[in-house]
Each structure stands twice: as C-alpha cells, then as structure tokens.
Length: 245
Image 1: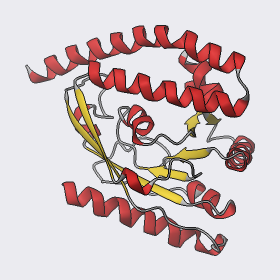
Image 2 (image 1 turned 90 degrees about the horizontal axis):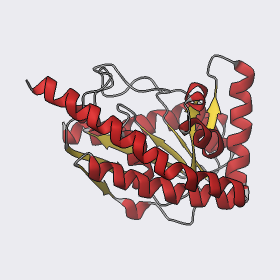
Image 3 (image 1 turned 135 degrees about the vertical axis):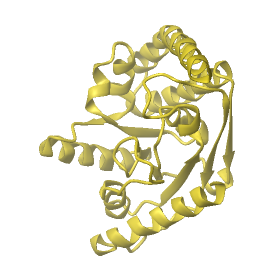
Image 4 (image 1 turned 180 degrees about the horizontal axis):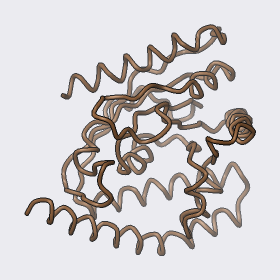
C-alpha cells in the first residue's frame, strides 16, 4: 500500500513540476534574451532558487542547510557534492546564494523547455567524448575567471549503489587546483530515502539536510595534490554521512 501511495504522490509531483516549468520558462527566456552572460547567470540562478523553494513546498519536503556561514556569498568556489537523488538538484540551488554553473550530462539538454534552460545556465558535457570533456574543462575555467562558481558531483552521476559514495573522478579537484579556487564541500543527507535513484517515480514527503564543510584552500597546490584533495573531500563527506546514519 505504501509503495502505491508513493507512486501516486510521485505522479502528483511530476505534474506539479511540468506545470511549474511552463510557468517559469517564459521568465528564463526573457532573462537569457535580454541580459548579458554574467547577469543572466545571476538572475537565472535566483529564479532557480525560487522555483526550487516552490517545488519543495508543493512536495511537502522540508530542507535544512547547515553551516551556510562557511560560504561567503561574494566569493567564487568550486562546489563539490554527493548525489543520490533528483531532489539534490533543487537542494543545491537552495543551499547557497552564490551564482554557479552546474556541470550536467549533455543528454539533459535535449529535454523540451528544460533543455533550453540547461544549455544556457549549465555547462553540458558528453562524458563519452574526450574532446567534449576537454571543452567542458575550458568552459569551467573561463566561468571561474568570470567570477562565477562551478558546481560538480565528483561521483560523476547519481549513486545508485548501496555504498555511501561511489569512487570520485578527478575533474572537480583538478579544476580547483588549476584555478587556485577554494573547494567547498556539500554533503546531502536523506534525499535518496524520499526519492530513490532506483525507482522511476516514487516520492514521499519528509526532510533532507545539506551540510557544508569548511572550504578547502587550494592556494599553492599543484597537480601532485589532486589525489590528496580528492581523498580529503571524500573523508569530509563520509564523516558527515556517518554522523547521520
């Protein structure tokens, strides 16, 4: 019975998401059409934060962002977070007011309406194409040079395993070191219990938590420090996850 109720609630959530997308899309279109690159990113991010708040309210999902004082609203960061649920995406938007561009799978850019927003607000990458991966790295570096943060999930995709974290890829850590930008680590707790990555649509109300760790200063780090930075990030996330388990 509970599974049936979760599926029905998931159908309701899908309808709310689709209808709300139709409402916010014209605002995104105007932002991208009438403002320059940097201003459009800032305005679109603020719109995304409002949309995320609306969705969580409609889904009866409470969220709490902890240690937000670690993140200076005017600084540029490389953000790194774990990822186990589609609920993480709006949570990332609510977790910080800093304007950022999210690294996204290229396939998502083909979704009607939403794909338009993703192509203009996010940085897309075809992970199976080496040249496109290199292009995305250069775009991320340029984005940071423009004073806009970049948000990545080091696991590379949603974690559908039973392990707390999947092995990390090097991209976020190489980017932070190459640009000498602080690495800010965000750990999400409980999102997969409300919307599992293993089910197409089965949502339940509840509470999710996003906890920031103190940013890691990468000043003076070199390529030789990538593995150390990656391991330190994983240790920070595991410590938070174990604390809530």
